[in-house]
Image (cartoon, rainbow, N blue to C red; front, top):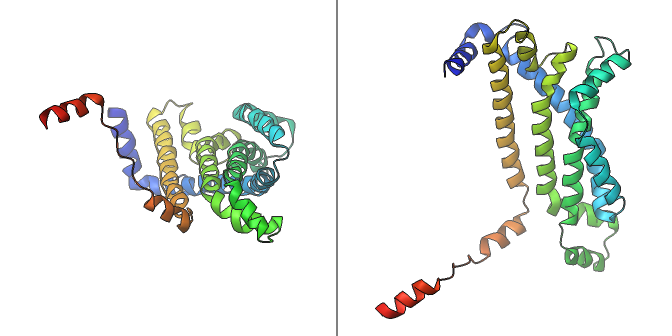
Length: 248
């Protein structure tokens, strides 16, 4: 408990909220790395996932590829890219973004194609019978109905990237991982705990925001159907039924 008290006291110190090593600066850097990574990954993975979900093509290949990407060691790959390619300090962000994009693609891809696949085929057939083109079906029918699952994939990717973006500090970048990397050699475990707590708090805040967005993206018609659905009444057990008949 003393360690947590020291960590919260460190966070509450006004001196740690200013300057290039201040908490706001590190949080903004961390959000910058994470936001850039998720944006690039969304551009790459979501259109491909929509195509796979709508056509059913390359689904097996995508599952195998995403499984392989999940198995990649993040820190090992980052170290390899930083050493093997002469990016230099000014371009050190490139290997970090590459590694984090590879980390973010699997949940984004899975969320996109599973969302499209979850749409009732009868709804798609009805849209085709009305004369809609495949692009219109995807844009006006499938994507709106699949949007909560697509946002769920984005939510999973954001949390993984935010938690893993601390590795950027290994190659002299900023972010909240800076507190952990700088404090470990001098055994400043309070500062290490501060870095871990701030990453956790940032992830929880983003999680809450994305959960709210995910709920708001549920189509109004779907919400109305769920609201009108009758609640199932629990079955009475034979013992309760027997007892009630005897008392009656």
